[in-house]
Length: 70
Image (cartoon, rainbow, N blue to C red):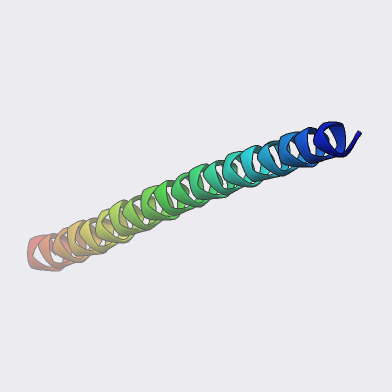
């Protein structure tokens, strides 16, 4: 009976350790996804800022060209 209890306790310990490892792997995977999404958002924000800067520059050029034309 003691041997059975010891084996059962060992199996429970192994199952708990496996569940802990799997949970840690999932946490790491979720963190990697979060970081990748943040990087993607930063890149998109940067592209948007550059686009807006270029738009402002082109509008200013057009305004100056119009003033020279008039």
